Amino acid sequence: MDKKLFEILENFRPCFSRKATYYWFILVMIGLIVRADHYGISSIVRWVSLSPNCYFSLLHFFASTGWTLETLLLCWWNYCLQDPLRLKIQGRAVLIMRSHQSTKRGTKNAWCSYQPSAFRDIK
Image 1: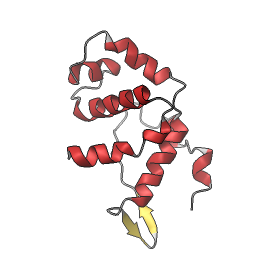
Image 2 (image 1 turned 45 degrees about the vertical axis):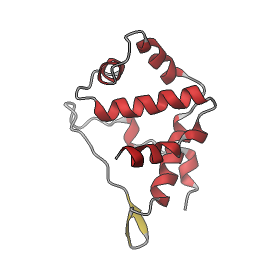
Image 3 (image 1 turned 90 degrees about the vertical axis):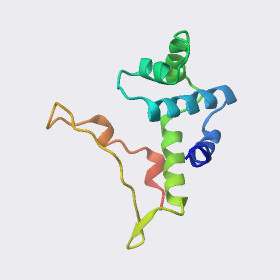
């Protein structure tokens, strides 16, 4: 799994203007995978066994101008479309995601309807 994970993460290198920012991204992704609780950035610090001083560096990573969410989403979308293991039904890629139930049922989540402009032109 490690090899496949780093193979996938390598596709995101062009999304970051600095190598250090890319390394923080890898650390965040690993932290999101291994954490067993959902207490935000402190969960990542705790489960990846980082020094507590890294908390503020992680905060800075999320506010950094060295990357954009739209670029990351576009890169992920391109990877999903090129992955040889993807499922296709009638010529269309099927993407399966894990969802979670919200305690506020019936409310609209902003991320559900978000579609970056870069995705609209992908065929």
